[in-house]
Length: 74
Image (cartoon, rainbow, N blue to C red; front, side):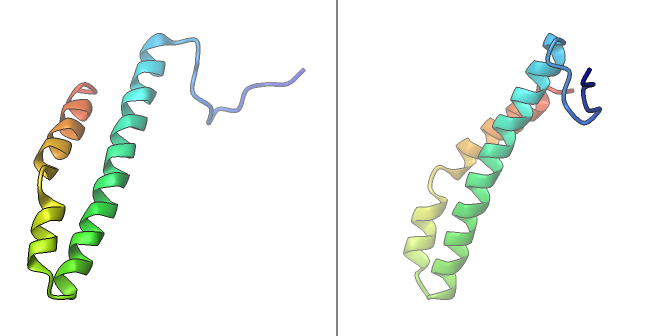
């Protein structure tokens, strides 16, 4: 008989499943934001201030979306 690892989420608990999904979504947004900010940093290093501005356009919406997901966990 196999036993479940204590590191695996309890998939029968709906609250835990929702919490895990929220964290997955927030992490996906975070990964995307970090990549985007790295591109902005690269643009600035290359002297491309207009490209950096373009990279930042709309980023507030994504930050707010991630913040909203995380607030659901309070």
